[in-house]
Length: 70
Image 1 (cartoon, rainbow, N blue to C red):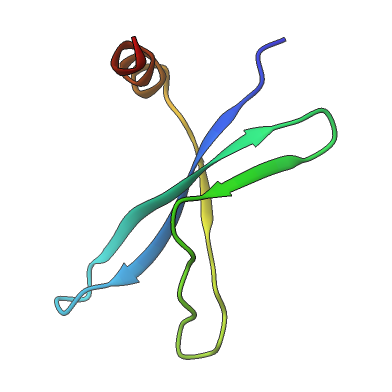
Image 2 (cartoon, one colour; image 1 turned 90 degrees about the vertical axis):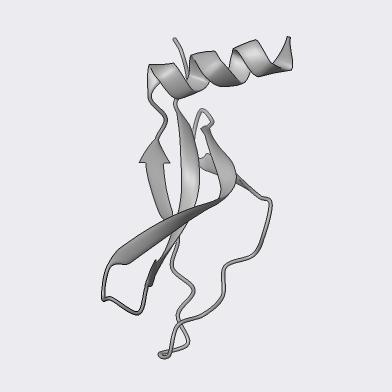
């Protein structure tokens, strides 16, 4: 069984009111949980919450990452 891989994203609203996302790490599905590896730590919003989003990687992203590592 292939385990799922995720991009770890943070979202911020720019000056025009458009939500922009930045990749700050990678997450991997384990047998019982999800392991998150941060390249950077998320900053909290005005409410003191640090929110991250997990987005499943597409096959194209996985293939290009594998090609770069070779």
